[in-house]
Image (cartoon, rainbow, N blue to C red):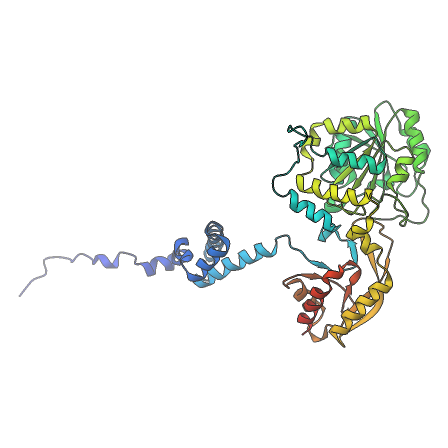
Length: 470
């Protein structure tokens, strides 16, 4: 009989942890590696469409998010589920790109949709300048040219002012002027003109960033000439007048006329800067100031936007006293806010339309000048194509873009019955189309305003509406 010589050693297998047990302790170990995921057929298709580097980086980011979720007690997704998340992330990236849309809101200068659409001539100029171009090259001499020289010459010709300069937006133009002429000194502004523009940017904040000190005069609703006179000291650098283009104060109000403030500035030996905002050159549109009237009143520097009523690309335009404009152009800030070659090209084409008396070439002015008869004809045709779920009615649109806030544009609307789907489903489907359509809603109905739809877009709009309503 065999006797047991002593205690048997424990089997080693009972002390080791297999793969199954380790994943039970840390379920993140069950997640596939990046290379394994990238080898899936669906991921190969994504790599072919987007490029492997972007897909790989997105996959790593998604895996990091999944690891955090699993560590917090979330379920371990399958490789196919992770791949679907990667595909969704890439689709969201694509959806966020700048795309062409049909603006059927009736808001002509829609800030969220890029304000003024460019003319055909401006689009062609941008396309021509997209490659190598004479942005800083003189073809006559074969030497270096001056960026923006032609635009500045056109601006002087158009405005009649001796000096002109274009930068990348109106806030930049204001920042440049304040930083050049008023740094460490005081600028007098009415309290009723301390406006906030888009993105929570306020005049006092821009002034502070430029190194100028704000001196507020008057009250929110009433400011008088004497308020400016009494505020002038030896520390004053300039007077500034800001047109409150995105709001209106009504009732018990008072504001000095521009010529009176120019006189105050002249007597004190100070420049006056006028921020017009919208860029209306001449004519009358509500209470919007015009560049012609501003310069005629004696404004030393007038600032306005290029992509509002001027009808061109985003730009900040400064015209006025040549000595002051030259000081602005030589300041280091001018290099930081200069415009690129594509904007220069579009601005030149827009200026040529103005100089040639062809304002009707600019889409903004075609929309603003569209007749109710023409809008009625187009709306009737569109409603007829859609059928009983559409009807034509009168309505109003807006100029938009921080211009003429109290003005309404008489228009003709196509009102759509959304049926059981509801307005939210219809508007979402219109935004999700091959060519997104942006509309507005009112009391459960979708409204289409053809004032802001180019006639050549009518057919595309009709197909989009029919597809969604079907």
